[in-house]
Structure formats: structure tokens, C-alpha cells
Amino acid sequence: MFEIINYIDYLLITVQGYPLVIQIAVFFITVNSILGIAIYTNLTLVRRKKQFRERQIKKVQSRIKEFFIEVLDNDLEWNESDILEQFEFKVGKLTKRSFRSIVGALEEIIKEDRSYRDAVNFDKIVSAFDVIGALESKLDFSDKKTRLRIFQTLSHLELTISDSKILPHTYSKDFTMRQESRSSYMGVSKNDPFKFFDQEVGAILNDWDQIVLMQQFSIHHIDALPDFSKWIKYSKEPTQIIFFSKMIAHFDQRTSAPTLVELLVHEDHKVRKEAILALGRMRYTQVEPKLMEIYHYQPTMCQDAIIEAIAYLQTGRAFTFLRNSYESSTNSNSKMLVAEVLYLYGVKGKAYFEQKLKEEKGFDKMILLHVQNPLIKSDLRERVEKISKNEKLNVDGVEASKGRGLEGLVQGLVS
Image 1 (cartoon, rainbow, N blue to C red):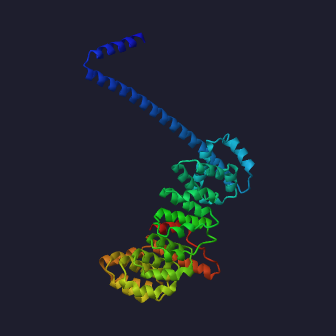
Image 2: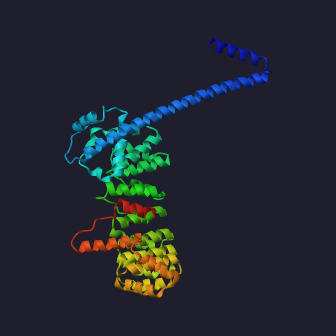
Image 3: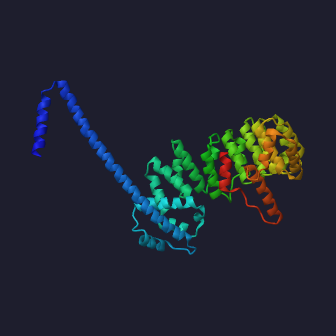
């Protein structure tokens, strides 16, 4: 130690013999080096501490997840005290820090298997650990990132909290916060859940907004759905009109079909396309003559939508139209679509398809072989087959299920 002090003293004396500029430079280099080493050491310690804490949380969360699955798999109803008692026995003492692991475990379980949300003990777990109360308190005293995370958690776990807790955030100046909170408000409010559709008829809805809204409709308002056509009538924003057109079709609001028919003359071709597809998926057969009438005056996107809609309608009265469309088509993708619709269009359509398969050569024949291949199933074919299956169920007196499910609609929303 004495030698080190002597060496430092020697360095100081040596530096004092240098010019002033070099002394200043040496001073700043020394100070910066010490600060750099101190900062690096501190960051390394903080990082290692965080990694250790994350490993501990993950380890605890894994045990909590196993315990929750055990409870949820049990068909017998547990009470809150039993759940807490078994939790302390199998996982450990309940602390404030373990709340993060509890919420994370629940989210993982629901993400992996949505059916657990309907388990008899799911709400018991939420009540036992006061998940809703903890989320509400965090919502009042947290930063923006945490609040957004809470709104997402509420959506993932399909939980409802007091709308008075959410309402102040629905008028936030921050766009992301405003959108997330309004979506959550729509899920929990029983008073006026759709008030923000009336207030912001010009708001743009991106794909994620549409998916979240659809989830809220399916989870919280399936038994009291609004009339989507009213927003179509006075909204000027194409993304909103497109979204509500999809909702009308998904929830089969046939009384709103005339509103969709009015959209066939809309100036935006994307709006026209979705209106055509919605009418087809609802099997609103009255519109078929109108679709065939406007076909030749539409862009390719809308023409393809008309062909697809006719496939869903399956009236049997559009065979001549489909045949002429196939013969006059100059676009290979459109030609493949018409060929597939003909293949699915009853006996006459399939007979014509087989005839063309014998006559066509080169690339056109490859198109037909592609359509005929049973290993290549398009979304269109699956939808038409599902329609036929539902028809048979209805004939047998079994009502087909309403809507196409969240997964099917999500695919439609982002397509």
C-alpha cells in the first residue's frame, strides 16, 4: 500500500513538470477514465441485478402458472380462501412483488388456451388475488407505459373494471393512451359503450384498432350489438366504413344490408369492395343482379369481389355471367378466381370447368389444374364449403352458429 502511495506521489511530481496544457489534459483524461470505469461498473451491477430479478420472477411465475392450471383444470369450484391457502403451500408467501408474476401467469395461460377463461375457477382466482383492485390502483398512480400495459391486460384477460376509472383517460392528449382507454371503456361500460363512435366519426381505424374493437364486440356486447349501419351512413372515413361493413357481415345484421347496397356507388373502390364482399358473405341474394350489372364498370379489385360474392350467394342464376367473365378475362389472377368459382358453382359450373380443362392449353390449362388440385385449398373454397355445410345443418333443423369466430374474422380484418 505504501508503495502505491509513493508511486502516485511520483506521478503527481512528474506531471507538475509538464507544460500547463499537458497538465490539464492529463487531469481530464484521469477524471474521465475514473468516471468511465465507475459508470461501467455500476451499469454492469444494475444489469446483473435486473437479470437475476427477472430469472427469479420467471421461476416464480412458472410455479404460479402450474398451480393456476391445476386449479383451472379442476371442475369442482374452489373458494378464495382455499386458493390462497394452497398458493402459499405450493408456491410461497404472497407478496406485493408476486402480483406481477400472478398477472403474467394468467396472461400466459389465456394466450396458450383461451378455453381456460371459461373455467369455473378463473373468476375465483381473479377474486382471490384481487387482480381487478390491484390493476385499478395501478391505473391511478402509474406512468403511461404501465397504464397502456394495464389496458392490454384487461383486454387479454377479458376483465372489466369500473368505467369511472377509465373515463378520465379517454380524453387524454396522448393518442395511444386515448385509443387504448376508449377500447377498454367500450368493453366495461353498460351506460353508453359506443359514445366515442358518435364523437369521432372521422377517426382512422388501423388494423390493430379493428381487431381490438372486434374483440370487445364479441366478448362484451354479443347479446346487445349496436346497429352498425348508422355509423356507415354519416361517417366519411373509409376505414370506419370498411370496418362496420365487415361487422355487419360477421354478425349477420341483415336489416343493414340495404345500407351496404348504397355503398356500391361509393367513390372509394376499397369501400365498394368490402360492401360487395359483405353482401356476399351475408348471402343477400337480392343484390346479385345489381352486382352483375355494375361488373364491367368496376376496377379489378371490385370485379374480383363481385365474382367472390357470387360464389357465396350460390343462387345458380349467375352461370352464364361467370362463363362470360371467364372467357373475357385477360388477367391471370382474375381468371383463376373465376375458374375456381365455376368449379364450386353447382353441377353446371363444374361441368363447364371440366369441359374447359379438356380444351385449354398452356398456361390457361395450368390455372385449371391448380384450381382442381385438392391439396391446394383457398380461403374462398373453405368459405363456400362452410356455407354448404351450414345449409345442410339448417335443413336438418340445427341452427348454424352466429358469426365466424374471432380467429376467422381477424384473418378477414387484416386481409
